Image (cartoon, rainbow, N blue to C red):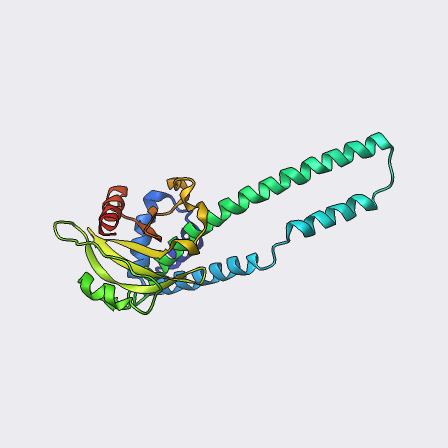
Length: 250
C-alpha cells in the first residue's frame, strides 16, 4: 500500500505533466520500486499501442473534401449572392483547414518522435534488464551491435570525464532499428539513441526542443547520416557535455 500514492499519479508522470522539481523524485522511486517499474512499463506500452492505433484510420484530405461538398450540396438553394458568400467562406475554411492540418501534422510528427524517445528512455530504466550487453568498455559494446542494426557508429572515449558507460541494447523507433546506450553521471542515467537519419521526420531540425514540453533534458542532432538523441534527468550541462563527446567521436 506504500506505493498507492505514487501509482495514483503515474499516468501524470508518464505524460510529462509532473512539475519538474518532482520529476527527479518520481524517477528515483520508479527505478528503485519493482512494482511501480512494472506498472509504468505496462502503461507505457498501452499508451504507445493506442497512439499507433489512432494513426491507422486518419481521414484523408480528399475524403474530408468530399464530405464537405456533400454537406454543401444537401443544403436548400439560396440566393446567388448568399450562395456565393457561403462558397467563398467554405473555400477559406477548407484552405485554412488544409494549412492547419499540414502544420499540425508536421509538428505532431516531430513531437511524437520526442515523446517516443522519452518513453523508450523510461521503459529501459523501468526494466529489470535495462541493457542487453553489460560493459563499461566501448570496444566491447560497439562490436555487439554489428549485424543487429544496419549502420555503424562510434562511441566516445570517456577518460578524464565524469561519465561511465553501463552498456547497450537494441531499440526500435516507429519500426526502425537503432542503438540505445546508457551512461551514468553522478547517479543520473542518460540514454543515447542512434538511428538512421533517413528513417525519421525531416522536421526534427526545424525548431529547437522546448524544455517546457519535455519531462527530461534532451539534445538531438544529425551527423554522418545518423540521428542522435541524448536524454535524461541530468543537468543540461551534462547532456551537452555527453553530446559533445559523441559529436567529436563521430
